[in-house]
Image (cartoon, rainbow, N blue to C red; front, side):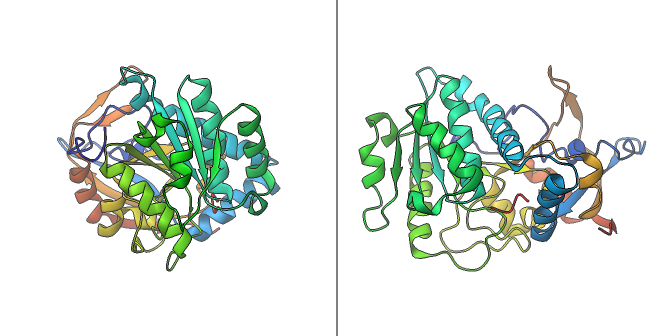
Length: 319
């Protein structure tokens, strides 16, 4: 399932997929009957939208922030589990975790991967002193579970990896949980070195899963900083981000899968742009009840490029 063998990225992933943007439209009307074609609507969120949704989910709805992190981790693990099922040997999952909330999502996911029976290792982007709040809670839990956690040293980029058990030299899965939607501009040298390690492991055969969006990609513009993670799959939390469907964003995101973190739908609908596009793909239903567009991701993204913006409402995951 690495970028070496994924070709069209049309994998049978659980849950709703970006090739079926109707996935996040629980309150939107059914696709119009247009013969062989129909219309989908979905939402594009900005960096500011994500931040405000996170804030209001906690302040207005009383959802603890650590519950949002836990839900994100469960979504990540459930989606990635499909890749692990294909393994003939016990899989190894390497989590690259930043020191903010995005890293906290990865640290919480490490616990769930361990519970699934995978070998799990964590490389932390910076000193533990920089980790706080919900992320520190999940770091502590992972350590008490016996998950090996190493600190990345940009001057010796492979030292942390080499100090993990031998199975992590060629991991089955690499989870990119370094930077989130708050990133913009240029990468710091230490972050660039860690993302380079991620890309190298992907080139060597690991499947790379990005949490929310690839580290180094601007959520608003889709501009990729030099050294941006090249993901095979991106688990986009809450909804799609503007930058994901730009030409640059598509190249770095791979296949996009929506991850639910339990934010009320009526809150999400107060933010973002509503976008619609005409789709002429056939839809097939999986055993889990989700629909899949029977086409390559590139085909659906071509439709998205010609989308019509039909509205923007008044009204984060921003690690």
